[in-house]
Image 1 (cartoon, rainbow, N blue to C red):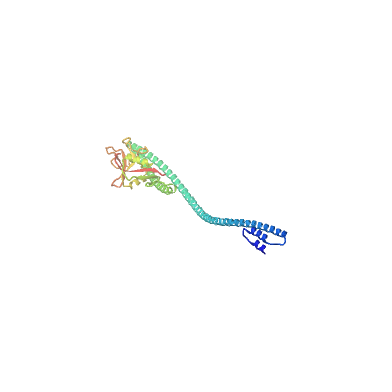
Image 2: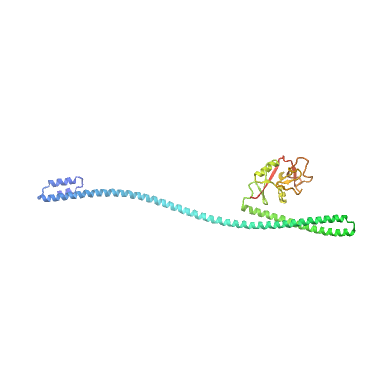
Length: 343
C-alpha cells in the first residue's frame, strides 16, 4: 500500500520519495526489492517524459489556438473585403450597363444627326446648282438685252438719219419688233431675278439650318446672314482703326454684294464704315478686295464728292428712310461693320 501511495504522487520529488520508501520498507527478499525499485524508477522516467510531452503538447495546442484565432480574424477580414469587392463589382457592372446604354443612345442620335446633315447638304447643293443655272441664264439674257439695245440704238440712229418715208417705216417696224423683243426680255429678266431672289432666300434658310448642326457658325456677338458673319461695333473709330480692328478679328470691313446685305444695313439705323474707299486714287472708289465700285446705287443724290478730303465711305440712314453711301474724311470716327465667312 505504501508503495502504491508513493507511486500516485505527482510532485517533482516523487523519485526521491519512492527511493526513500523502498529503503525504509522491509521486504522479505532483496532480489524482489531490487526488481521493484528498478521498475519504479523506469516508470518515473517514463512519467517525466510523458509530462514533458504533455507540456509540449499543451504549448503546441496554445500556439495552435492563437494561430486559429489569428486565422479566423484574417478569414473574417478577407470575407469583409470580399463582400466589399463584390459590392463594388456589382456597382461597376451597373455603371457599365448604364454607360453602355447611354453610349447606344448617343450613337443613335449621332447617326440621326448625320443623316439630317447629309439630307440638308444635298438640298443645299441642289439649290446652289439651281442658283448657278439661273445666274447663267440671267447673264445670257442680259447679254442678249444689251446686244438688242445696241442694235436698237443703231437703228434709231439710222432712222434719224433717214429722210425717206419707206426707210422710216421699215425702221419703225424693226424698232417696234426690237422693242417688243426687249420688253419680252425684260419680263424674262424680271422673272429670273425674282426666282434668283427666292432661291437665295431658300439657300440662306438652308444654310442657317445646316450651320448649327455642323459647326459653331459665327462667334459670339456676330450675326449670321447668308454665308457670312457680321459684327457691328459698339464704339466709334476712324476708318483705318476700324479696318485694323476687323483684321484683328480675322475679318474685313463689310463689302456689299447683294440687295439682302443692303437691307441688312438699312435695319441698323446707324452710320457705319464699310470696306469702300477712294483714298488711293482720289476719284475711283474700290472695295477692300481691290475691285472698283460698278454702281452708284449706294450714293445719295448730289454725288459722292463734297469738295473736301473725303476718301472713306460710310452707309448712313437718312430721314427719307433709305440708307445710302457717302464719302467721309477717314479721320472721322464712326461705327463700323466687319464681315467674314462662316467657320
